[in-house]
Image (cartoon, rainbow over all chains, first blue to last red; front, side):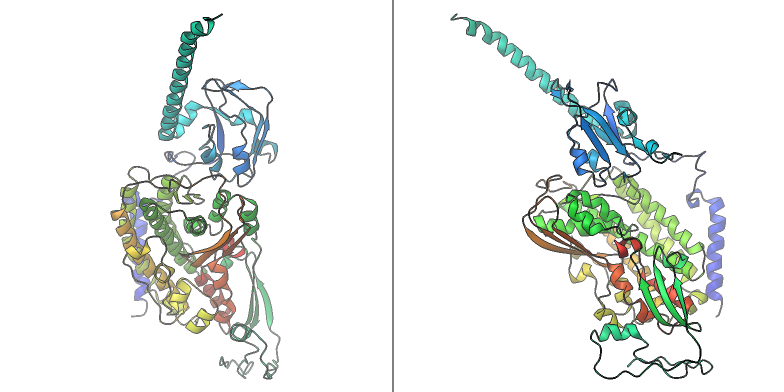
Length: 196
Length: 409
């Protein structure tokens, strides 16, 4: 009786050892730098800022500082610019002069992307972020954080498609409203000029 | 009167007195007893004091045991914790209700989703939000998957403490990877999920997730059989665990021990049955109970609990309905619950995890108190270790199942 349990355990180990050669499902690891796992759509690491068309003028961020207030680790730093720029609906919006994220503090929770009302801040999937200098190279500025909408479409296809669709609908609605207002102004103009 | 018979070469011939067994006396007699306690017998040799930790592989993190040894036997043990103190309760009081959810992930970093649930359950009690059906099912599924992760890894760590370096732990980690893949597909992160929200969940299940989860759950039973074939019958493992670190039921109850530790001592207390939360009353599962309260029972309870979790998972994955995943009244930002207080508790894999919140109507909690199960379970470490050898003390600590992130907060 004594030793039987140990032998049984050994048999189990041998079965696993042989199985790891025979059965690909038993291979738990991959040869990392050469082989990479396919990206997972939902995966998130650090935030980035989305821009449409042009990184200098197309940044969606309106410097509302909601992400700065909600960030649990308080790693976002925003300074508003005095100059305004038109957004995708043609409305004049503020823009950030400084937008820094300290990624050595960021814990990648994704709350900033969740609370952003302008679809401006999203979660990236880069994970090879090590740097030889630990202060300035881990403090990302606006220029480093800005990434095109194509990048967002690439890493989160479903979410980006839904966002694009919603924004397009909003844009069309705004344009229709503007056209309607313009038409109304045109028809109203002769009436208002009439009595003079 | 608790006596440990000692007869080792006449060194400590007289039985140890209550004063010697300080831990047992502490639990049962909070006030110093009026009766005169006899002086401990003079020894003809000095006892050895060792600080095990804070950097010791057996302490599962930064934790120190100040042990006093008489030969190889433990005569005194003082758990010292606080090395990983990160001020979570005060962080909760300066952050908004939403911004504390990622911090709950970091309490017990092996089972982040149950910590999430404990916190959002408390805030839901405070605000009166209703969780939709589908979200309740998702919560049960992720929390039972977390239980599988925790218990299988714990069994691996426990065996590692006994000297089975690697094999059982790596088998457990292999299965854990499959569950972490599921979590990554669902929540976006492998360990720090930040998934549950007040009144529901952050996002819906991705397409095909339920089928993947069913496959993983179905593959877990063969793994458990394999794991048990490897370990449960192993003579060395039984010799190291049977009769070691016995915790009597009355002591466990009076010390506030919860979770598998308490059930291994034979006390039928599982919050999923005793104070049901979520939709647990809908599932039929058993609460396994131990008879001896030793390390082997604690190991066995966890294996049996995993089998019960698989039953719950199979039922939940089968019955999950379609529908919304969050209460439409739920607010993400600017949550200001009415002034009041709430205590929410759940059966985390380690025991009763409680959050106590006081709101003064402001955007941040006025006070947040976390009741971590592993801290309370750790307080009776001395009572279990007295009279045992120092190698057994390591195994007993392993069987308590501590995560220092939660102990020190």
